[in-house]
Amino acid sequence: MERSPAISDDVSLRSESVILQQGSNPSRTPAFSCASSPIRTCAIATVTTGLIALALAFVLPDYRLFQGTMLMAYAVSLLGLNLLTGYNGQFSLGHGAFFAIGAYTVAILVDRYELSFVLSLLAAGVLCFVVGYLFGFPALRFEALYLALATFSLALALPQLLKARPFEGLTGGVQGVALIKPDAPFGWQLTADQWLYCCAVVLTAVMFLIAAALVHSAVGRALIAIKDHPAAAEAMGVNINRHKAITFGISALYTGVGGGLSALAVQFVAPDSFTAFLSISLVIGIVVGGVGTLSGALYGAVFLVFTPVLTDSISKNAPWVVYGVVLIAVIFLMPAGIAGGLHNLISKYRASKDAARN
Image (cartoon, rainbow, N blue to C red; front, side, top):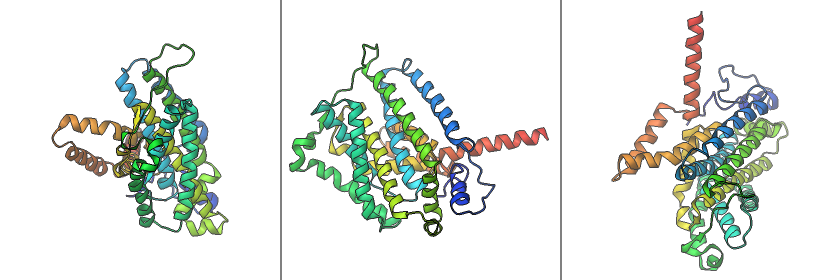
């Protein structure tokens, strides 16, 4: 699928002009990007969205807050996968494995060792970064489809490893691990769902700001240069293997934190919850949301959380048929993803408004 030229956030342009010293294409104007004063613009948008989301904690019922927490978990995970695929050009079909590693890390630390959920999420992120880096470094010899197959093998193997007898004492085997949602501290009058949702909103906002800072930094421009012009990037002194391995680790970190957050929301982890379909769903999420965009992670998460509910309400006999139809319709109508579709609509509106003035 062609990357959204508008929403690739003008980082692609900057990577070509700053790193490769090439001319830019004026038609590739950023959409919901952080073009001028990038960090400030992203910060304002993120904080505003976060405050609105926090206000919903006092309006929505607990089940909707649970859905909101899962939405945040998927958004963080999709953001990590988008950094890898959309910005660095590495295609992974195995990120469901990192999602599972993060979920199990949090579940084990919270349930078995009574560690706070904040430290558990931090530990999940660190562990996934290490695993992702160690896996990504030797996998650098693979390209495109071969890398996808290598990562897909990880997604297939991990659920079996979680069931393996040597690890049953830690992972719970097929029975899995149950945990309890954290209660609000300091006597705050919040339910467990409200507290976890609020923490998820804050965590997601922080992760988005970090990703924005990374993408709009010199390192981010190097990552995109590696994707678009690897030979030129290497000629300019960019260490391609090192950047790719670190990007894989950061991507795994994000996905692991998202998995840990989902474990806290669901209060249960089991091997069968992390099948290969989860990895495919994450890829669907970034494609539907918009490959190579930050906002696309949020749109993709909305799709992953609410589309199955919608399709099940339409047809309980064949929900996946309806899911497929909806997915094809979204891709057909918005080939650049939801973020790209929204940008096109806004661009057409602005163009018609300017034409009316003239």
